[in-house]
Image 1 (tube, rainbow, N blue to C red):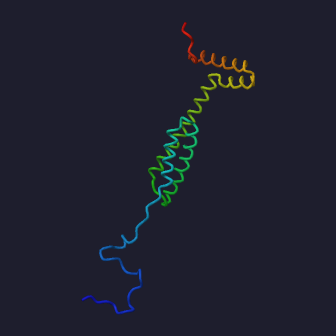
Image 2 (image 1 turned 45 degrees about the vertical axis):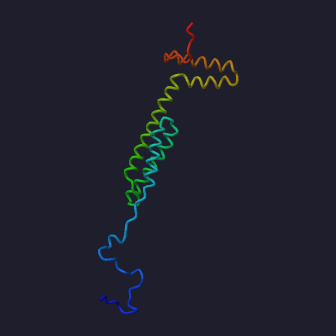
Image 3 (image 1 turned 90 degrees about the horizontal axis):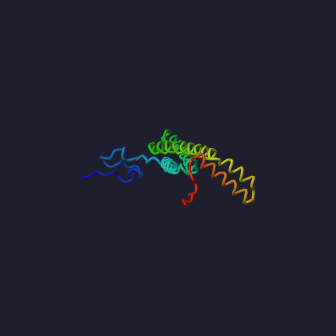
Length: 159
């Protein structure tokens, strides 16, 4: 028969040892690490990379992916967060989005200047509200593009 302690000598509530076969390692469980910043960096990096051709998307999403990726990596190194793979991937995609947006901006600006776009804008500003001068500016710009690029902007009649 089991021996019970005499009344008044029971251990206080909550102080009982774990059941047999279950050691202290199961008694306390480490909480999962938070991955919110890493997921945010990854999503922003993907959005930035996919939308880098819109320039605004590349700059905006790429910049924020870079920021969130760096913050996530700092928290991961301190041990308070998880998701290092997602943070690094988001960071890399953010940098690629920024680089692509910068390259596309430079190429676009060079094409605009080389095609006479800057001269066209200056001509339109000088023309003001005069419709005939605006039409002359448009015709001059169209001829400049056709001559320099060998491209016809509007189809010519074939008759």
